[in-house]
Amino acid sequence: VLLSLLVIILKNIEGKKNIKLPSNQLELYSMAFDIAIDCKKTMNIECGIAFISQQSDFRLFSSADVKKGVTDDNWKFWCTLVNNIKESNNAIPLIKTLTEGGNINSEYQFRHKSFGEALS
Image (tube, rainbow, N blue to C red; front, side, top):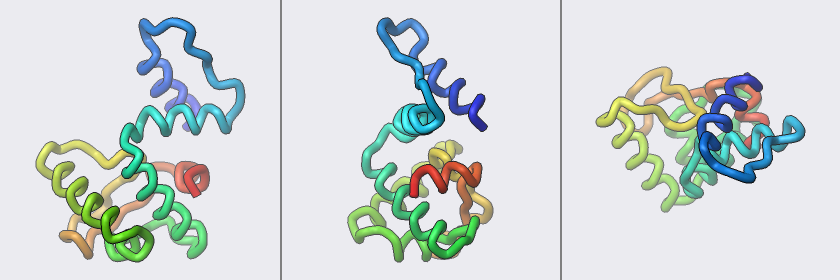
């Protein structure tokens, strides 16, 4: 996992000057997440999901869980994000879609347990 995060960082800084590499694990996660999740709103949603997942000790979460853990505005953004992802065959950053069931019945999990831990 740590190597994957470092690869995300190295791909992003290629050709850039005066970029400081992370000096510890916390900086590695933080820097890689900032690159992978380039939208502040997506980061807020994923932090909310991570917090709820950590409290309930569940690795899997549904769209209904997301709805409980975010504001109405962020819920609308999540629905838009999920629909755009389906249309473009991309992925939600750091999250794996396990089952697709519309806005409420879909199931997800963080691609790695440490991602949820780091965001919570």
